[in-house]
Length: 375
Ligand SMILES: [Ca+2]
Image (cartoon, rainbow, N blue to C red; front, side, top):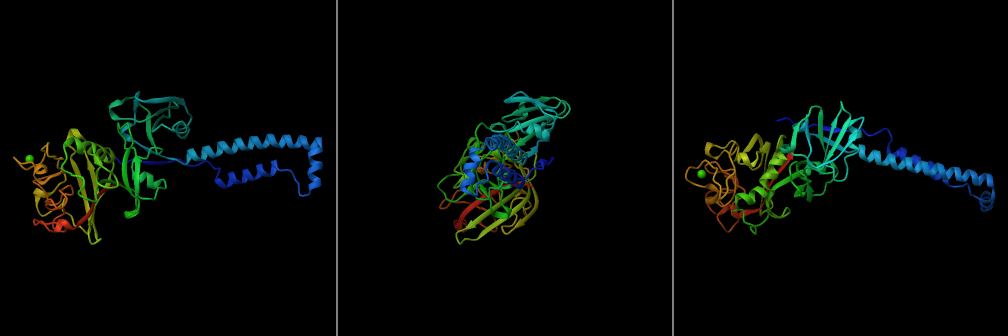
């Protein structure tokens, strides 16, 4: 996997203080010296001064135009762009918004605004193309093109956090892919530095997680209450990049136990949303999914199983149908966060720290979360 590079486009030398200074000059030039009321009369009546005033008004107008474009340029250039190596040396005709001549990559970026989510630049041809979005099925070979995502469409909560959104809540995000509408996601902007995208969240048993393959594929629930963000979305958010996985269980006594995994990604539907999990694992929950004492309970490399799609390793038995929720079951699990909420039987939410084979300890769960963040 090749980690994405973040390209910081340096802002032009004009800073905000310079703009303020320019505005000061405009203000001084457009205001006549009228400390004395009699001076005002003299100034208004003098044709020479009137001529000077007209010149100054013209100068002020020019200055305002300069300031306007400077502010626009500073705003544009302070944006950040993320390269996507998957699209290098490719071209796409799908959703092409426009093609332009541009001497530089930042110059090309200038054309990417409003509905533009991706732009491509060819440094040899000095050509620029803008797109709403780009997907791998719509690109073909064409050497020399490099593509970048515009952060006007934040791909996840980390990008929102990097852009100054520090309030936890529900936001629109735009994972790279073929999505036609933004994805509603709960962003945790305070835990461990913030910028976490919740892929699972549960606060009550009002929503059953015993759902079908299709429901898990597309996602279900309400982002700030009970939600599964969708296996397609998890794939799009983790594809080709290293991400942390943060799992937490909050007990009714207010204690939050968590486990942090260093590596997490999920493949696409063709590959049955196969889970890739890697350590180190640290936290207060303990590791019950990566390296457990039982090889039949380790989940990395497992496929996703739902009540109507058996991809687990338990022969002749569907773990999801039996235990009541979709998951990356092996044969079957030591930890499983999509189980039936109390008073139904939820076996081993996170054994042995939370939940054992008895039916009492899982009743102490107030909230669960699974959140991811790019490295
Ligand atoms: Ca099976």
